[in-house]
Amino acid sequence: MGTVTNLMAAIADTGRDARRGGYSRAVYTPAELDLREWFTAEAGARGLAVETDANGILWAWWDLYDGGVRLPESSRRGALVTGSHLDSVPGGGAFDGPLGVASALAAVDRLREREESGALVRNRALAVAVFPEEEGSRFGVACLGSRLLAGAIDPAKALGLRDAGGNTFADVCRAHGLDPDRMGRDEAALGRIGDFVELHVEQGRGLNTEEYTDQAGRGPAVAVGSSILGHGRWRFTVTGQGNHAGTTLMEDRADPMVAAAQIVLAVRRLAASVPGARATVGRLEPVPGGTNVIASRVDLWLDVRHAEDATVADLVERLHGQAQKIAAFEGCSAQLVEESYSGTVHFDAVLARSLEHSVRRTVPGAPALATGAGHDAGVLASVVPTGMLFVRNPSGISHSPEEFVEDGDAEAGVAALADALEDLL
Image (cartoon, rainbow, N blue to C red; front, side, top):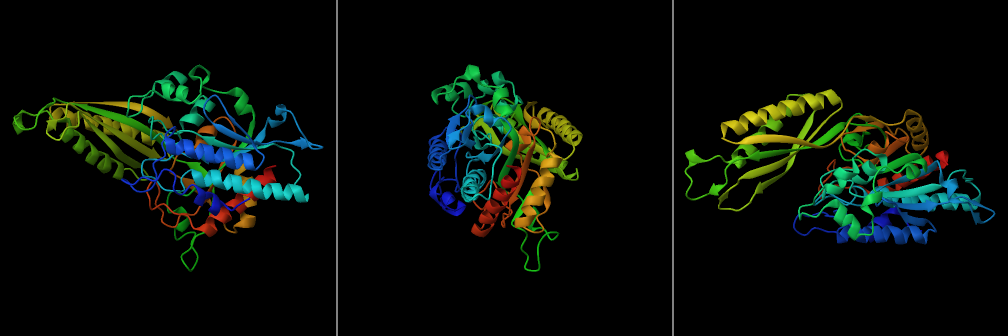
């Protein structure tokens, strides 16, 4: 019914961010809601039965039939599930999330053709899933939809999260037809997932490293995911004395912005001293935020990642201690709160071997690749077998307008996904 290139082209104008560049598609904003409608329409056009569960996850079901009669919903238990997310970081790229959803729809097209020709005989139902708030760009916790589904976050904590406008997650969900009292771990939905395979744009340079590139400098189009680095988000709150910018002498100040700036530099310095560690401060908010006001408080968000969970914990502890010393020197205080954490994930070994076998028929030499980016597949790995495919990103840049996937690589990703799903069906 259309190539993945055409599917992506159909949403190319949705959520464009004129100020930041790229796309801003925060969960339950008009842009993301438009994409959910687009997905529902595309799934419906393929004869898939679309449902929204208690946690706001969209499911598009390709059910089993016997003699032209759809089997009861009990036949969905142990189904094969693929998909990704549609939301984005502020000013993100076009492919992070939507490529996995569009590729899943295009793979279903290929599989339906094979079934109609008799080349495929399914013994499992298949679903395409769309998980909300994967990026955490609105409510601050990444993979919120899959965390709720898997029971990886306390529903009360999730429902109490607030966006920049002060709206709680509970209120926003209620406004979009969800019942907050029903949100949380969903045993029935988990029972319907036999395996979950997520295709995603590669968010680094792994497929373009010298180890995998050919003489022309081009890496393979697709890789199979092996693991996800442990990663988490923390919030520093640096508190000082708000005051007038014009009347307060420099020696009389307790300026949390000065402390915050030094903490940012300390994050870079300490992380660089730990091999394999990545630490980032990507968001900083002064209160009250006036140009001619010495801030009374500054919040800054810390992202730390490493393959060893103990190393993450040690680095965060050292950063906290350093921040407290910096703040005290400036006459301020610093507190640290963990907002989310996911330990290092190694994908299901049996599923990974199946994916490698299938993908390498389509993409010879497709490697197994670890990633430092978090995904819904990583959250679900604690409760169901999960695996991932990565499509080459020649820019090596993600969470940015420069994120890119060539059309040929995107189509190769669909071919590899379809073959992998066929083998699992």
